[in-house]
Image 1 (cartoon, rainbow, N blue to C red):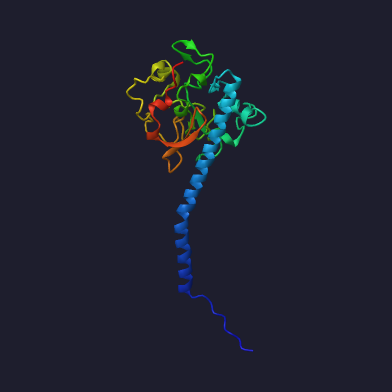
Image 2: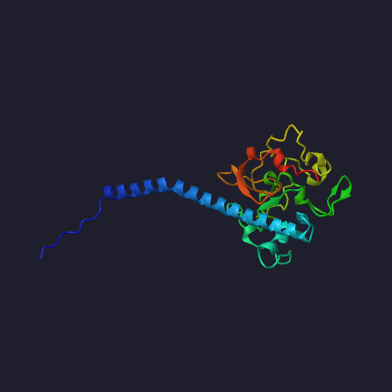
Length: 260
């Protein structure tokens, strides 16, 4: 019987194979990264649409009023909506992690229970004062004449954690939605800035953000543009539709609720 000698790969052949594999990885990696980013954005938008349906169901049960964004020591809007998304409402004692619906898959800081924040005037804190008068109710959705363009929830930046909040959490409210620092001082005492008037000349100007698009301590309450390489954010509108938007796409008219 004739034996054929075993022929091993030469060093050059091995290098060629390795080069081909590296080339394929270089070609496919951007496509895989883009596909992963797209999948995260689709899931994030799905989250917001579920929240929109839950908000509509809550308003239907509560004479068209939206929930308060935050009740100190008691509740916040994800806890309120959790009962409409799953059979049992969450609580502070059980944690606010009622559902992954409140967690953005593109969020960079692991953990936390909510990565979205609400409009601070349409869903204000309980008992906040405007011009010395305490609010007993939040915004009524039947006051809106432009529900398809009113921002109600959005991706929000996360905190790295600390003694007072959970790691990775976002604020319940977009406290700095238009660049002001104190939500319950400056703009809550100047409601004309926040209610829509067709005569306002700046209706079609982009909102102010102070160029904050990071996660970290002392930057909570801004929109977080964390999709599409930190250029887009998932925005939920009052009519329950959600879409990705860039900073320049979110205009003053989108944050100005109609005056009752």
